[in-house]
Amino acid sequence: MGFSTKIRKQVHAKFDGRCAYCGYEITQKAMQVDHIKPRYLNGTDDMENLNPACFSCNNYKLTFSIDELRQQISKQVERGREYCVNFRLAERYGLIKTTGAPVVFHFERVLQRQGSSDGR
Image (cartoon, rainbow, N blue to C red):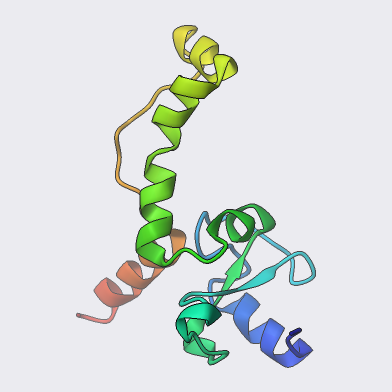
C-alpha cells in the first residue's frame, strides 16, 4: 500500500529529512516509509508507527523490531571479519577502526536531545 503525498511529507519531516535509523539525508522522493512495529505484528499506519528510512536501512530492517535491528547491526563487525576478506584487509591496514560502541539510532539521538532541551 502506498502512502499519500501528505503522509509522506509528514513522515519525511519527522527527523528533518533524515533516515530515522542511520541519519543519512534523504529526499522525500527517495525516502521509504518504515513501520516501526511491522504490520505482521499488528503494526498500524498511524504516524506514531511510521519512520522515514533510507533504502539501505529499510531494506535491512525488513520486519525486524527496533531491538532486533539493533542486535543485527551490532553483529556486522564480526560478520565482516569472518566472511569478508576486504573488511579484514582494510582493518589490518588501519583503514577500519572498530569502536565497540552500542548501536544508537538517529531517532533516539534526536528524541534524547529534544527531551534534554525541554527540561525532561
